[in-house]
Image 1: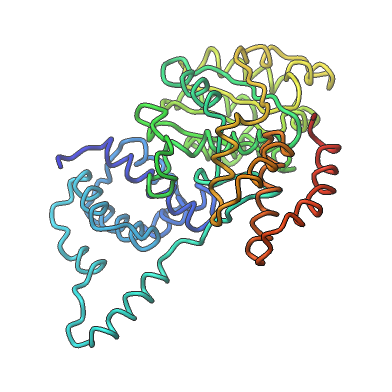
Image 2: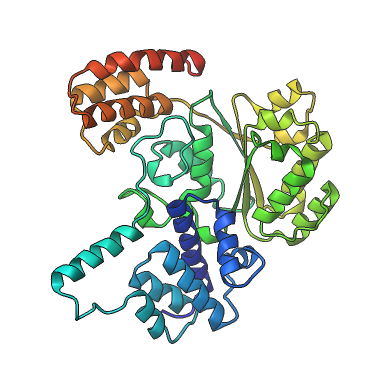
Length: 403
């Protein structure tokens, strides 16, 4: 393979996301740790390389490859492609470190036992079959929303990036969808289900994603929020950052397509420091100052402009969301795919019962699948689990979802 900065960036991004999923850490934490391992002050150099810039020295390439292999457990093929894309010409000793020849002095049975132990030590933590309560963070566990994904990613395949509002009742899967949008394109195929699509964007390694959770009280402080966004956009971060400084930095330095995903926008609007000037400035930044390279996604229970009006902060920022998607139940085939992912097969009668009583909504689907699987693992193949499930289902639907 010839030297290829774009391929290097793609493989590095895959490596970072693979470690993120393997160790259940945030992207910024993984990048910082990789940077520290290379003797840097943090992860900004990793973000820089992920934009298609090659490391300047073989020492950096070698150190980065060694860390990625140690923490990611990649195979020899991946290492070969990674080093070749960076122009690293003598990888023999790296292969020897990572893939030593079998120890000929060990009896075959002992060698097999050692290999099995090493393999088990390197396995990633096993993912839960079903998720009840928290948002889904790992793309492999996300099901459905194919129509929404296709429509949204189509808006980001070309300049300018367009803005999206995701509307949905509580527990309809808004937060899970935001995380999936931000992670699926850079997730290695080995971390996905067979045939799970990831080719939504051209050159996905170029895209940057900033997830802002307004339920985090730190995001209510304007300066901390601005610092956070600059950090995740891999832009210069001054010690003190007011709104004009933030606007200057982003407008002058942002050159990669970047999406800021804002969850629980109603909570953000309630924050006193995030005033009308803040929201007006975001509109100006996204529409006029970044050459179409900055897009926004908002998640809310109702139309964002209406929420802004209710909080006394009307702003033209909320008028730039010309594309809105209201989340309803999953399609039947999507719901059935989720049900069929159970490690122990459900009977056709159980599948029909789960489909009917969940209404196809993601949260009840996950709950009922979890309860059915738990009963099967305890050796209960009767329908008694349904009696236990109904009160939980009733409480859930009364709390959050229309039926």
